[in-house]
Image 1 (spheres, rainbow, N blue to C red):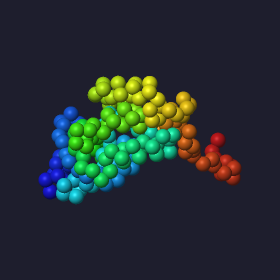
Image 2 (cartoon, one colour):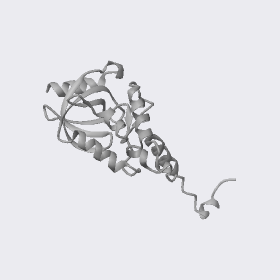
Image 3 (cartoon, rainbow, N blue to C red):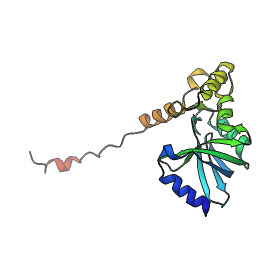
Image 4 (tube, helix red, strand yellow):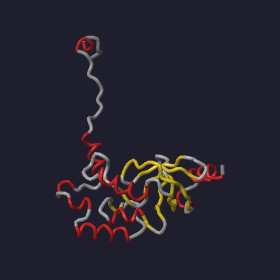
Length: 178
């Protein structure tokens, strides 16, 4: 009950007011930067790792990024350093398994990018530069396959067929007023 009250409060607070920690057990990993966990009172919580962005599922290196996160957190107790709740009602957080900063490790392994639109910790940029220079993870892919997830998502929206109004059948045109 206390955790549910905390979560309701968390959703209603402005993002700058959220800076608490929460412990939960990870039960599923859906993408390289998103998982679901159970709180101590068995409430399900969808978590998106803050300050990083991993390849999408269908994007090159997407499956490997998901596996990297799963190896770090699946079926483990994690501590969430909560930043905010996003528009999809996911809890944005830095994630720790013991003293291990999961967000940092994923970038360091080349399984995720430092997400510049959210970046507060410049060490993530340093980890990304090192991973790129060492050719780790996604940085081993051919240059044309290395596309930041936010660009991949944007390109998907552009290439999606546009919805258009169906044209009027020719027979209606005879009834149209001049």
